[in-house]
Length: 158
Image (tube, rainbow, N blue to C red; front, side):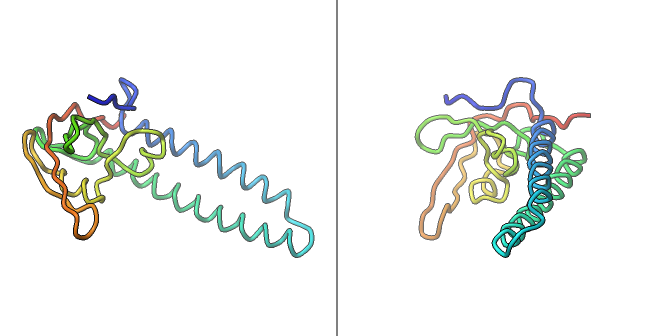
């Protein structure tokens, strides 16, 4: 079985909170950089426009992540079936692999993640241990996955 990159004792909310802090730090550094370059010739102002666009994109990611953290505190979990926040072991045909069913931001934090809106994520959400489900990673290609086990969900922090 492949090792999962979720540190023991880590919960899904703390992964998101840590990622949020990284994005906020990145935003603060970019804002500082932008303020230092607020004057100059046309080329400098063009760089400022790019920085402003990057700031807006970071603001959108931060807002989305804040919403995701809030929603995770109210998400219910069903025992015996794959739910968001679960550590799930699946067999995609080459042996057992363990992933977190979670967000893109958790994947960005270095955690092996299956996102709920991906074709694989949509196929396994709600599936019970032992079930084999099919999914379409791209048009014309069908794969199957067997749910081998569902670990304890990575609980939201209180």
